Amino acid sequence: MMVAYLRAFADGGSHVRNFRDPTARIFLTPKARRHLAARQQQLKSGRGGAVLEFNRVRADYMALRTEAIDAAVRTALAGGVDQVVILGAGFDGRAWRMAELAGVRVFEVDRAASQAAKRTPLAELPPTTACVEFVTVEFGRDSLSAALARAGHDTGRLTCWIWEGVVMYLTRDAMRATLADIASCSAPGSTLIVNYHTAKRQTLVRMYFRWLGEPVKGHWSPAEMARDLGLANFHVDADSGLDDWAARFADGPVLTKHGQHMRVAVARYAPVSS
Image 1 (tube, one colour):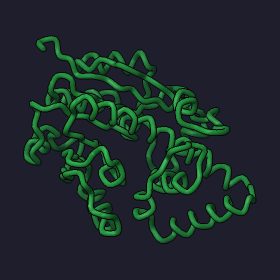
Image 2 (tube, rainbow, N blue to C red):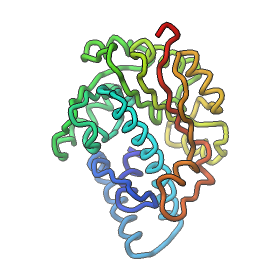
Image 3 (cartoon, one colour):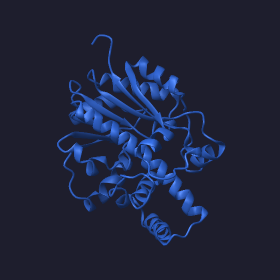
Image 4 (cartoon, one colour):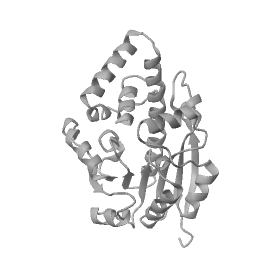
């Protein structure tokens, strides 16, 4: 819900020049919609304030992260990918807002409760042109590969895996176990896009996530992430952070100081046997 709120805020005004996400608003509770309307009215009127600035900074971060991942998805699609798997999909709206996904099989993987909360308001959106499959998985209990196989995922075809906003809440062992499952379902040349946090998180950031009920459990340096990905035969093509995304996608000032822990790695699956 928090991520959807920030994408909806950014859709109505951020420093990220081309960011649009008309899907995010429909997932908000009535209370969150009222809060969003009040902040956006405040933004239009030119009135400032600490709460508005806090919202806008966080919305910029979320918009930049989204743009960085979207760009990597477009590159993968241009390279021949015709399957996309979104791990821990939550209120992800890509299948409804990215025109490039028309005709692409999109597998949204998440817990049953999260998927039920998402599917109810989808009627407010125009029908997706992607071929969406909802895949129910209790991570840590169910087999990801088995669930995807039942849903029709083809391990012989190129896949783009999106792992956004998840691994920072996993232990290293849990992350590596899921990564091995991803590798077992990947054709050579498949792409993995993984969003992770470094140890640069400030105390306030750690306290904020704990207050939300999502304590951060894992962090990696770029070298550590590359090593873990390499153990599963995913080889990093690019690893970027908030400053890189701001230079590429933002117009005007983005206060990146408190977001230095955010990173995205893009890796290709290249097993030795291939």
